[in-house]
Image (cartoon, rainbow, N blue to C red; front, side):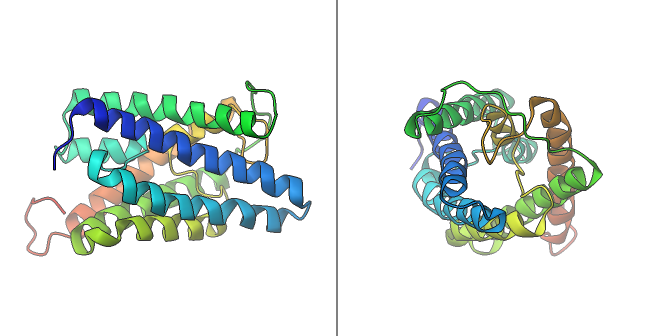
Length: 225
């Protein structure tokens, strides 16, 4: 079944909004319920992994359930999307993500518009974002190649794990990074720290796509993974 571009863009915007609302909202809830940082992070991690399974399952057949500009970039480079549609996807993802932060604030009776003051900077954070995004692309490409029906679970489980093994807690998504600059809560990031995160995420995505594009081509051909 093929969906028209308006429906595909709506799915990307809505899916990214719900993803960010879950990330930000669960962070607020966890931070409210406990002052134990590890327990709060766990309370932020599990809902994020769970909602990814749900959103990818629901929206995957409509738009591919990218919810992430670097995923869209890689699929555009693979010629699965035209440049114009890819740019529209990115716009929908960014706007949807920002709406998700505002929605989370509304649900928890916080000021709707905030700018984060949470510092997330330094070499360790940037390397972590390269690793997190590399792994995400590896998960997606490997899943699409070998077990397409399991991609939702694979991505949800990967992000759940990456929250804990990366120093940055695995943003791995420029739209989510931008959206989290609009919340001064547990999951926020200062706007000044966002560009470096985005650069690291693009690097990680390109490395992941390059390596797994080669690794998943069994006969050394240039066919898609």
